Length: 146
Image (cartoon, rainbow, N blue to C red; front, side, top):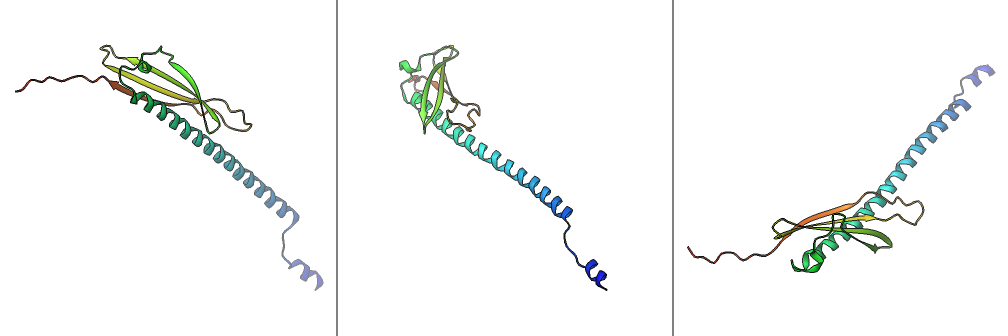
């Protein structure tokens, strides 16, 4: 009678417990990898947003000057490069201006790329943000009446 009582008791064996702990560890590591991936992408998104803001600011400055201003002179194909700092992060701003064949319009290209971070464990290069616009000279129309 005593043996029947012990054999009817149910519980987890050491092997079952070990297998379940290994499975939980594998799942936990997978979830931890997802958190790391999400944190890196959030950091990249913030960098990309700031690079877009820097590019828009540079473009607005070039669009606000008169068409004949010296800042809108044509540049070489590699453009002119400057470095700006926003929120403690440095960005390279390359501006390329090309004249049309008739010299009545200019194509302005602004490319912003973040510089490598000096902060450890920060994903630094996601690519660049490029904005392109065309400006044209004001021309007087005909004053002829019909």
